[in-house]
Length: 314
Image (cartoon, rainbow, N blue to C red; front, side):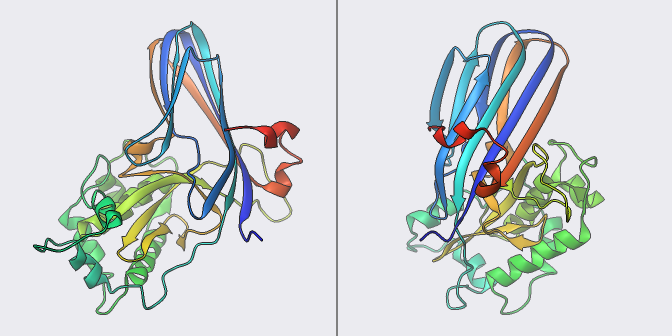
């Protein structure tokens, strides 16, 4: 018998262009990953207008990617991603497996003749700087303040995510997708993407392998109020590699270890690797963008979404 939680997710994106667009090419990462703790029952993306060409592939990190091209004149572009997934409980490593922090950091230092598993090598690509993540002394010094002798990796992750949660303010108006992580660190404000990049900068600056994860999170409405369709949003968190165990997911925005309320879409070095929507166009001038995300438990979704939902094929 399943012990997971089944969700239905709808992600709507609408571009409205001031002038007609003659050519548009888009890259979408809106399909949840099939994982040991996450089963994807159905996932589909609809676009309007219909694309001239469409191609599905996997990127270098194993994420599902949809590429399409529109070659007819249009003033609006809309796509809806719909998925039905089950998320199963995830567990932190037992005390016998949760290595000391110093031991994990030492693990990545070069040692002639040392053997690494395929998983170890995969993790090593997440040790270094990337477009939105910086390896700097300022981050290392700030992070070292949370380290203690004998501290385990999980204990350290808990301390780091708590400090970010406690000292930084969630403020959607404070940053944009291009705000440098150094500026976020200085002003102590941002959103989930910023806090994920900050935590990654701290982790990599002290020699730990950590990756950026994008997805969704179930939000709870105020007591006595119904859930609002379209009121949710994409979410971001981090995943830290523990040799001999695997990946441990941490959500610094909410000061929690990731469990059954998080739905995983993609992972990469940072946001630039896995932005949910990216594209180019020829034509237009100014444009507006509207995004609406709805995450609902399966039993609630039946009364909200169209009855054909469960027939959506991959």
